[in-house]
Length: 623
Image 1 (cartoon, one colour):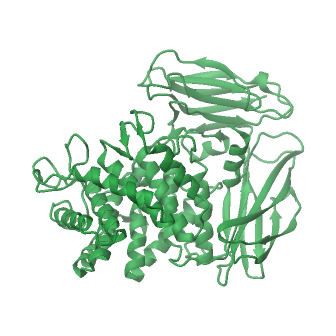
Image 2 (cartoon, rainbow, N blue to C red):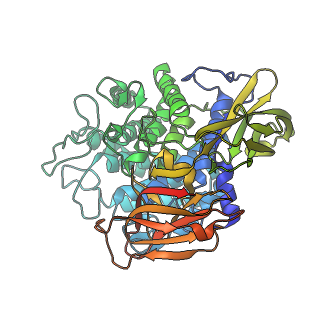
């Protein structure tokens, strides 16, 4: 990985935010307290930056999921529209220009892409349609709206009144009619109508879709949306997923904007009230997916469902100005910030913070939608945030160990305004951090592009520091009342011993690249993706080794500097079922020495067949 990209990713890690404006909560605000407008903007900015650190510019997506990438990019569009930040417009256009063509199955999607962001997966096509409407709203460039129309015209061909009286088929094979595809259809066509003067075509499609959907039986007697229809056109009573409920709410709202029919708002309120009523989608006040329950794990699809719900719940709160809906927004955003955020400011699958939790770009995009919901519809111009780099350093100790930590301060404000921020650092007892106090001054340029300044901290760790996590904090203040702290959680460890897909893995995961983790003991890299662990053994170590519990089609490479690699193991058989799972030990002794560390990279030995190396558990030790 090029150094500049690695640096960019690290710069985005560990963000905690300070809000600067006329109103701000004090540093000691109680957990669950709603953020002020400036704080909400800054928190969203931090989360958006973390999300975009996973964007892959060559394929112009988030590896390795096609429809999930559409939703993540749409969320970034929501972020820019909601906050005024415009830094990520080039990435939206990069995706549009690079991915609008036809591609074979397996390149960007498991399905062949037919061009214009369409495929046999009709709902995938619709997600991209909504993404390009969002891009049009941001830029007013007609090419984006034109693409959304092309996608809608493609989907229109799968509306079929000969089966179940109407509805759009879920797939090209016409085997299933379900809630997501038809909720998307109504929202997309209503959005097109509301952006195209004198349109009647798309309004008619939206009304037809809504009438069919609300009479299809998929909305059950409790007002909750089941997944789809059986072959006999009766509701299958399947799982109530939050994104289906949210899309139904969003579809009705956009159609109401087109028609101002009060019956639509009544229907939308029923759907919304059902979602937050007992037996709905909320557990102890927190939006909870079916797969969030103990003993279950959300797949890559389910990881993004709650964010889609919150996207349209935001629309609901903005449209109705109902305090109940706004209070729900505030509660979700506060819960995520207080409980579902690790030290590097990644946001997880389970918003309650219940463990085990999963963190990746999909969960980041989902939770970001909840943080955006808490941003006022008219955002404040002023905000101030602080991040630490690195946020999760690991020290395998020796005497007199030092860690360098950068505190990066970002600000927005009226053009030409000078913001002075004081930075006060603190370390555990017996540790030292220099400088303990410093000041930065930032001249703001509006809210489209935040400005930033950095403070370098030198942290000295005493010999004999206990194994475990130790926090070094930097409190950033501007004025007597505005204060917030960021931290770097330094892990002291004499060995590495962790399951993949857990929070314990994070400090050791040097470069996740395009790897994925579907729950505990399941990190894998397929195609041209890989992942790298770094073990910073002390300079006086005489020997070191790592044990990987690994299977399927793996390549294992070792390095002392993370740049020059030696291949030490390659699976030559095309295993897809884990039958070759074993503990394999690799000697890292040749890579020891001053200024070096042990780097382990896992990749795919058969990059063209869709399976790659999978690691369950990692142990690394030294003497």
